[in-house]
Image 1 (cartoon, rainbow, N blue to C red):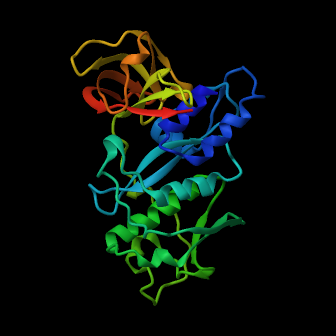
Image 2 (image 1 turned 180 degrees about the horizontal axis):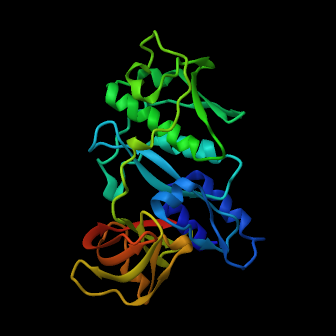
Length: 305
């Protein structure tokens, strides 16, 4: 139970993972391979195993702030297959400007934009947005990235041929993603389905350390575990945690569920306080052989479970 909640934190608040804490009570102890979309496997390799139920790995494509008009794949997990498309799209709308990715992804979707419905019929997925999406001030290149992000994110689930976009139940005038500058309420739009454009996708960077977070039981005075969360499943070759004085923290280190974090079980939990500096040195490798190493200082977050 605790390890699954750690995964929830590691995935930056992905709502669907809450379901995992319920399902695992009856889940078998046998390790099973996470079910992954082909997009996940293409960009992040074989999915990890878990004994906490049936898990689904997928990708969300965020518009890049560094290369205009491009999108960047980012891995996510859920235990709720039925609403996986909505979970992915809601996460896309929410953006991601946290940790070591701060400032790297654009947030072109207007505040208040909601998903009113997602329907698939005959290989065509129709997504219906609220009218707030028309308030976007994005230029043509960013609008193109918005469309590519929507289409690529939705197209990985099942045998999707096309994506159509509606606003308040009316066709937006969905255009080809190469002509996306006309998309947001500018009129005169062709009513064509959108198809995924893989040429818009940038290759993922090497693994990154996202944050250092301590977990404690609700109402407890001392932390139970300290977690170094990475942006994807990794094999941890080396990990060191020290205080601001450079003195190493003692304790056992092990992997979390799905290999998303290195978890320290401290011998002296009273040392860890919210906001204190924690220095981390790491060396990791992901499932496609991309390696990374580095050092950094993080302000400790403390969360209850």
